[in-house]
Image (cartoon, rainbow, N blue to C red; front, side, top):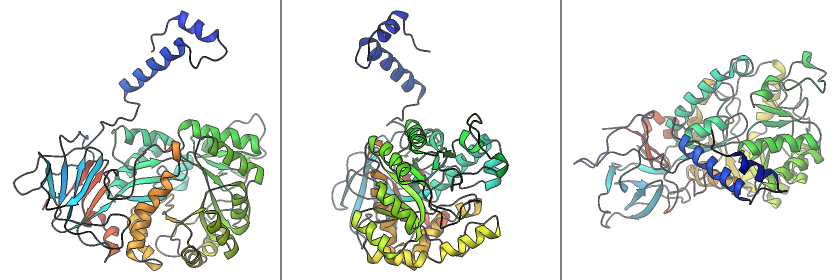
Length: 491
């Protein structure tokens, strides 16, 4: 595949460190050329599909599955009101100019348009940043748990490709993936092979034996040293690791695959078979090992945990984000606030969006957990904890379609502007915490000059009616991701 002669290889092996010798440089250069030619390096040119402005200021409609093309010039959203991702009120009298993949300017509409600028007439609608789900499972949202654990995983991945397109059509231009083998899907989306949101992948769940990420049957025990990996481990759903050394190994594997952050199962869960909610999982040494692996790569660890004990141990280890946490006490919440640790909460209630349980025991755990949701949000607000929003939809195709509805549900605890900020600029800040492991360096979740051009045109005002986001097919007339028109409704 690569034209590398044996002399170069011999030179490379003849030195203690080949990082800087000519043979290594040549191999790296050839590899980069091959990767670029095959399209495996994410290209800045996988870009916008925009038609010339017609006499009415409109743009031709494009199907979500159409191949993207680079826009030939600037594009302006005119006749719009703007929610910029940070303000309480809409900006009026302004337009948004997009150039390539970025927002070029948010400027008074009285200024002359750039030469050759194409137009999208918003007809008085509201332009908002693309939505961000900070706790999504790109591979595991749609299949049932039985299907995910027993089907040919090629089929599960194919379902995920379809779901990725549907996620984008709901207005979610970015997701923070909290567990599952999403690396291949991310690459396909980044290369423009299939439509979908930006994915910040965690890779496999890091879990102890008997933990929330252990999907084995009791008949699989005891696990012998030569037993090999389980099915869920082989396909990259989970990584069972006991002891600090194993945690380091499996954490480093996820980073090698391209994880932007690591996810550790630090406590019991609703859907898992063996661990009650009160169970604390991992040890301080094991959690510190995961944190060390992440911090050595410039990123962070987030943990699945519900209780004060599990969260407290995670805080001791240096974890920087807590997923769930519905059962923590106020002292633990105050400690999170003091340390500046993020809280990624989900609007878990006993309602139509409750994940279907598989047993009476899981149902009882679910009821115990959701009973703490109202108090968790109250503490998060009162103590000023940086709070992210996510859905944590798992194993249910119907629930996946309710992504926007679960965002609208946040009006139970927050005003509309706060909800929209959480799903745009605030979640964007959390994504950016990956630092040098951020696969999409650039400003997310805001309508500002220099930010990524992820934009939704809403027919109506979501600051007055959040339910508009629960009806994306009717309410979203334009969806733009990375400067590309993914949807535009005519008329």
